[in-house]
Image (cartoon, rainbow, N blue to C red; front, side, top):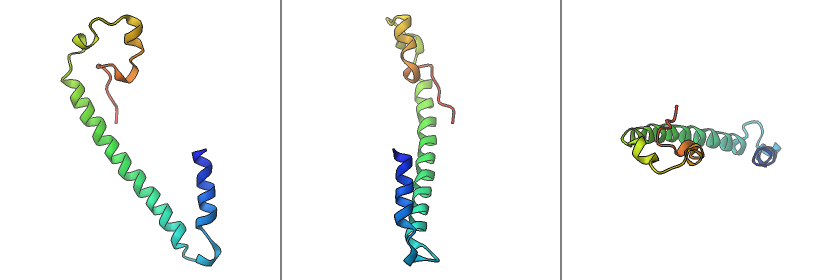
Length: 85
């Protein structure tokens, strides 16, 4: 559904009376690209921070008392998991 919203927004942001510069459409496009860049940079910073935090954890003590099924269901919450930026 989110992908289809892009087509709807593009239809109403590149209007014929704004031609040939299309300030509304180009402004929205620039804002979306800038937001993606900022979120990506923040995500890389967060992944590095979380990996450093996980380096200080003792994996064995974190997993103590858990069954094998519980350990397997931890997925990214497993203390031995590391993000790869």
